[in-house]
Amino acid sequence: MSEYVQTLTRRRFIVGTATVVSLSGCLGTSEEIEPVSIQSGQNCDQCGMVIDQHPGPTGQTYYQDNTPEGHDPPARFCSTTCTYRHRFAKEQSGWTPAETFLTDYSATDYDVRTDGGKTSISRYLETEAFAPAGQLTVVANSDVDGSMGTAIVPFGDSGDAESFAEEYGGQTLPAEDITRKLVGGM
Image (cartoon, rainbow, N blue to C red; front, side, top):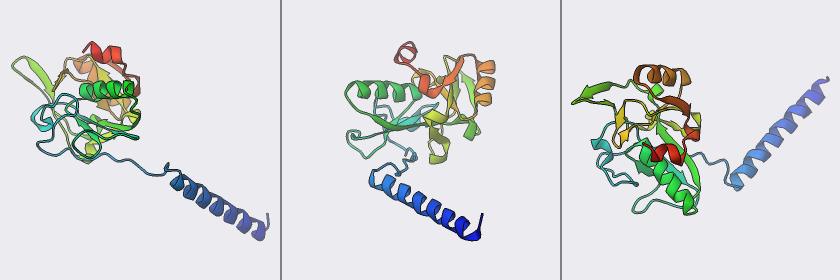
């Protein structure tokens, strides 16, 4: 291939890519949604509990055309259970989730402790502890509790989820496969 054709091909690729990026910006598809840190004293949008006063995984959800009552997005939750319950209820009301983030225990140095017969897992509220639900494998129905009883514990590495399930029981599945029935039985 001649140098002129290679240069022309590269220019077409760059121009074509720039056009696609520009158009996607106009269509609103290039805006990235990012998790935020959950601040001390903030309440769960599902149950009202103060999020930082309880153990276990947390969540946050951005909705396409709706915002939580009383504060800017995202809706924030004291547990993965509340995250899913809120999403299911809002979807029935016509809200469309744009992105849900859950605590990624593969990205943390977590502790599991037993106190008074209950086994719980540590809580992380910083931005870097969250990952998109679509990238996570969860352990459901383990022996580990969060703020709302049995925790749904998410991991970015499926091997970490399998190891957790071997030690604490439960079943592993993609976070996006959590159903209303599963959450209702917890």
